[in-house]
Length: 280
Image (cartoon, rainbow, N blue to C red; front, side, top):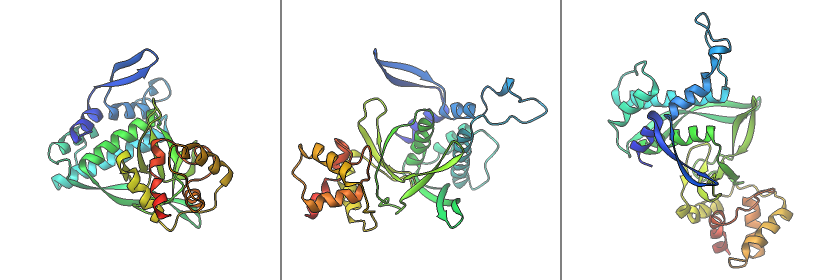
């Protein structure tokens, strides 16, 4: 997806394809930023919002996401104009910003980062650096994931790009800890689309899974206490289509992937781990 494509999806009505039991269907969808804004305040007219008082958000998660993307768009716009942004809606600022930058323009924005402290998990503000095209695509992915969460498989290892092991997500008003590194699968087909870090935003395409496996295997901070029974069952299932694993290699995989479903990803996911075999 190009920078132009992402901005169009964020700011304009657009066509989208949907897989149904009757086949592929094409639907018209509103601009994603508009959809997200309506998810925050939509339908409030009959639930207490009046001219004499501010409306209350109906979705705390939508409000947090809208505030984050709105802030990042304003920061990106200000960086290229060398002046504070106007009070225009983010759609206008995003369009103006994208008309000046290129796909490879480096952009720095503020992003929340949750860390463990003695008092419990706390949210800190950190600076993150992206290519302009990647940042706009990230905004699209975050809004899409809010409305239609993707299927994910956790990778029980620290991110090789930022070394973060866990991230915290808000769920039902509470901070829930989850693995930072994940496989993201297609909602309709279940095929693995990419691997990603939920902390720093780094992504790896299927063609880079072998490289990702090498990075993970070389990371000495990988946790090693895992449930071997479930792991062995998954290894036996996928090993039929690949060279046999040695006991040492099984132990290495056990250090990478935890118990439960899926303990060791199958199909395309498993290709990310085959580099372990080269260690012998």
